[in-house]
Amino acid sequence: MSGNLVSARVWKFGDNINTDLMLPGDVHMATEEVQASRVFSANRPGWLAEMTPGDIIIGGKNYGTGSSRPASRSLRNIGIACVIADSVNSLFFRNCVNFGLLALECPGVSDLFTEEGQICEISLDNFTVRNKTTGKILNAQKVPANLLALMRGGGIYPVLEKEGFIAPMKARPAEAAAGH
Amino acid sequence: MGMTMTEKILARTSGAKTVSPGEIVVVDVDTCVFIDNSFFPVYWREMLKLANPDKIVVVFDHRVPASDRAAAAAHVVGRAFVKQFGIKRFHDVGRDVGISHVVVSDRAYALPGTVLVCADSHTCSGGAFNCAARGVGAPDMIYTGVTGKTWFRVGETVRYDITGKLNAGVTTKDVFLHIANAFGEHANQNVEFGGPGLQHLSINARRTIATMGAEISADFAIFEADDAVIDYVKSRNPAPFEPANPDADAVYKYRRELALNEMEPLVALPDAVLNNSVPVGKVAGEKIDQAFIGSCANGTLDDFSIAARVLNGRRVAEGVRLLITPGSQEIYREAVRAGYVQILVDAGAIVTNATCGACGGGHLGVLGPGETCITASTRNFKGRMGDPTARIYMGSPATVAASAIAGVITHPGEFTKEALV
Ligand code: SF4
Image (cartoon, rainbow over all chains, first blue to last red; front, side, top):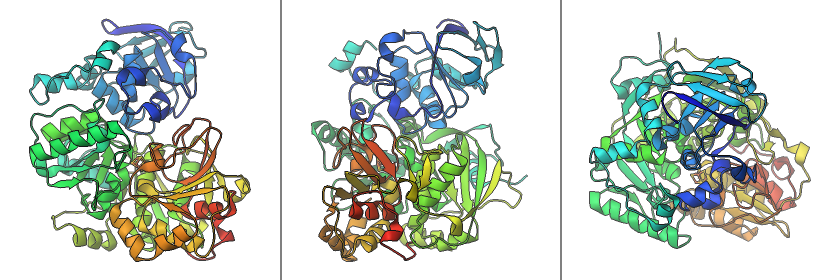
């Protein structure tokens, strides 16, 4: 992602996609790498092999309902550029701010994209979402500048570290291998 | 313009005169509850200072006693954190342990009119006490620990006016399933409860509804502070508080009546809670392998009492496992004193120690491939309690107990004709 324009192909998911689906309970306490390898394994096995970093997820209503687990971190770690949904669950939204994943609420977006693989273009200057394939465009809800900066800047840990509130991350062998 | 309960609390704690939907507010947090999950390496970040250790509570709950080596290691990290900062409110494995939201209730840590956060989605449980309590992310907890603050986006509020009284065999779990079925998700909305029917609902019965607020994706799920709440809190926590009841001209997105006398036992079908329930009769006869009563929503003394009344003098069906997990050791002790545990174990139930246990699929009752479970807990998502091919129905503790006796999903009216709440 560079500048204030994001353009990529979309994957469509439905209403009420819960965080257990993005981060299954049996790897809840595993390393980030293991967690990332199980995204949507229960509801859409094989999807991880098909998607490529930079892709966009389009959700329906109440995207990210469920537990407070860091499902957004797994999506960030597999390289999802942005989640756009008709509505985003507020706890999931917080974790997008916390872990640095771009998330936008855009009522109607699940109908704007009629098929997977269509190209979505997001402008973060005026918060518009365009289906490049059909040319149709919708307004997303504006994200306040401070939250947007956290979403795009790696979340809140780097900030807390810089301010001397938390210790630097200790390298853990398994996670070092995950490359983040 | 008047304010709702949620708006009043957020205004007071953010230092604003008023707040309204859409605003982002930065609030002072009164209580910040860390759970054992927070201390696993994949979540923990070492805090170098704390804004105020007296506002911190630490409860080990999801994996107690340590269910494996990773949990044991997390508990070691948690104990060191408690020691380092001299945290007084620490609930380690032992006499005072329990599910965090239940311990918060037992000790009345969620004071009326205040803000409480915890890295667990069912924190909204504290709303039963007129507290703006909600689940946040693990990083939010670290942020609150070191700064004493957090942020919220103020949502619109849906008001539920409770009227009437529950009929025999019906519990507030059924009331919740009705809300989830009839009105679906409440994403980015607060739900608030009050009205004349409140007086007929015990604190525990209210807590089941407030806790399940997470399942309709409500931001906050707050009850009015009536005398029952105020007496309960005062008898358990000497700290001063000021309840926040709604203004008469508060603005609501919707205002709906919940007539308790119209409620009936419902069951949520596998994989989803929202818009997915049917009257018990529609699925009666479905064979089950496991029945579970527990969790932060249904591990209360009321739930033990309900299960004991249904199971008294009866037996769990051959081939069915009935697991009952108290929400806290305090509840466990009371359930023993009241004789409920004796009745339940005589009937063939396994009564475990207080923990999240089977609810989160972590330990003490994980489901195997192709199994069917009926649960009185919080969630029936695919894979939630174990193998993703397991099917999880969700109902009231009365329905679960009745089903355990029959070995198939069964209407509680088959075994009890009395008012349960
Ligand atoms: S009992 Fe279940 S829902 Fe409640 S905190 Fe524990 S795992 Fe979460």
